[in-house]
Amino acid sequence: MPDVVVVTGAARGIGRALAERFAREGWAVVAGDLDATALGDVAEATGAVAVAGDTSTDAGVRALVDTATARFGGVDVFVANAGVGTLAGLDASDEQWQQALEVNVLAHVRAARVLVPHWLERGRGRFVVTASAAGLLTMLGDAPYSVSKHAAVAFAEWLSATYRHRGIVVQAVCPQGVQTRMLEESGPLQALLTRDAVVTPDEVADAVWRALRTDAFYVLPHPEVAGYSAQRAAHPDEWLAGMNRLQQRLDHTPPVNPPVSPPGPAGHRDQESA
Image 1 (cartoon, rainbow, N blue to C red):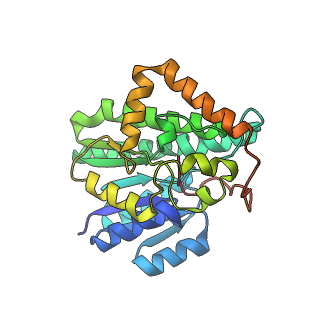
Image 2 (cartoon, rainbow, N blue to C red):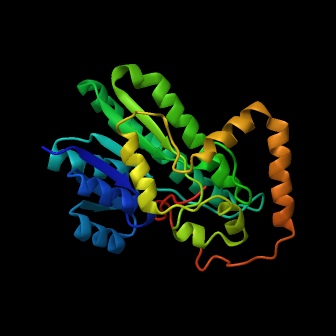
C-alpha cells in the first residue's frame, strides 16, 4: 500500500499544491474542502479521493479519516492546511473571531483527537500544520488571524512536546506572502506581505516535502522568518517598535486592491499568507 496523506483546504492555493506534490510522489491522497466543485477538479487532476465538507468540524475530520482508513488502511500524514483570515482588528465581530478560532485552531485540535490514538497504537504518525509567519511574529491589520495562528503554533508545539517520544512527528509550516487568492485580496496589507520575496504554492509544497525527511518542527519557505523570530525573542521592545512603524505607514496608506469578495465560509479558504 502507498503512504497516505490527508490534506485539508485542498481546493486551491497551498492545499492544492500539496495534494499535487504528494500525488506526484506516488502517495495516496485524501483531499478535503468545502468547495466541492473546485475539490472535484483537484481530484480529477491528481487522482486524490475528494471528501467535500467542513474540515473544521468533528464530523468533517472523521469523514476524512474514515475515508482514508476504509480506502487505504489509515493515515500516515495529516496536513491541517485549511485556514481563514478576516482583515479586521478591534472591529472584528464575535462571529469573525469564532470562525478564525474554529478553522485556524480548533480544527487542528479535533483532528489530533481522532488521529493521535491510532498513531499511538501503531507507533508512528505525522501532523503537519500550515500555520503562518504570523504565528511566529504578528499580522498587522488582522487581529483574529494573528492570534489564531499563534495559537496554532502553540498547539503544534504542545503536540510535539507531548508525543514525539512515542513516534509522532509534528511540523509547523510558517510562510509569509504566497501567490494565492488570500494575498490578492489582502488590500493595503499587500505591500507589507510582499516586502520579502513572494513564493508560489508549489514552492511551499516543495518545502514541506523536503521537511518530511528532516522532521524539523519549523518549515520556513521564507528563511528570513527565522531571523525575524530571533530578533523578536531577543529584543521584543525594539521589534514591537519596528512593527508599530510599519503600522504607522499603513495608517497613512490609502486602500488599494480591496477584497473582491468577502471571506468564505469556515474551512473554505486555504491558508495562503502570513
